[in-house]
Image (cartoon, rainbow, N blue to C red; front, side, top):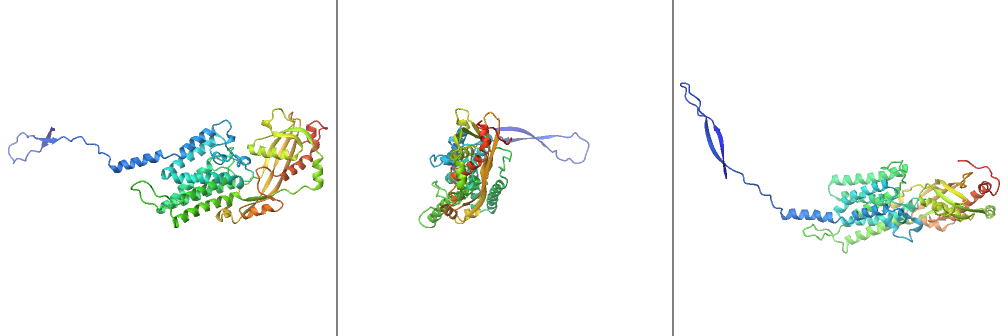
Length: 456
């Protein structure tokens, strides 16, 4: 195939002479037409690269199913059957895992799920086994450690702890790379995570959602998740089964097996030492005169308990009022089929301070961390007809400890392991505070003329 193209040519210069008409010369050049370019066929290396990427996308079998399950469980009308409830944890062990998948509100779910999916895909593309290991370490460590590191918190929901584990896993991977820039980025990421936990401990508010949100932040969950992700990031890698992949160290007898065993033992000791052992002082005993004063008082009334605090606070107050033995029946107001004679409103929660035992964590529970915190509640007792209110408030300053050695104090009188149910000594102290206002309470029941009450 050819084409005709007219190419103008410059006329040759003529010697000076009489004027003449200029001549235009044209040369016809045949230019071969360009053949259509063929699309290069992918080489074997290109096909291998695309196959590797597809395999990584297909291998997202850890994060995406968990994200879908979180959407399903959080959409249930009553997800409380899946939340972390300390009083039911050992009888219903599935809560160790499902507590991370339910949330308190749609906004809580949106924030946690967005971080979980984004960080999870990045982690799982880099290594599915290590991602699964990080989540498997973080889920039970958070579920066991949160109630013990956060006194007064018996119910937990959310993916934020697992988000911290995935974030720490990415940071640990950067620290393992030979590039100085990657190591600096990994160190900065871990410092940012510690700074976030420190902010939450100092302010008691989430860093991203803000202090106005109706979500109680749990710094212990973020710290335990970060520790689990860091441990998973530094575990020895397995040899790849793909042909042509670079060889990786195999865990056989010798140093590899020793490192692997030491890592697992350290993770287990860290969980047990920092979260599995603890102690706290109890209120002082009643005197014989105080016990006699309580035993002489009984109220022929059914009591319903309600509050704007989370459900576990309501359960604790119900248990305390039941153990006082002063009322005929005490139950959650929502569970009563008939209107109660008295309504108890939990208006104030004393204590619940978050503790980060850094020294205990570093020493794997050998050196304890001691702290002081208030324990107690503020209550308002009223009649269903709103004809009067009585305020009851009791709290005491407790001293607690976290770690192996602090657990030894549980054998001493006046110390006890933090139990799911409030101690009976606390119930007796509340009974004494209630008996001190016997006249006002009987006035609400029309058993005696109404005494002075405090109008809230």
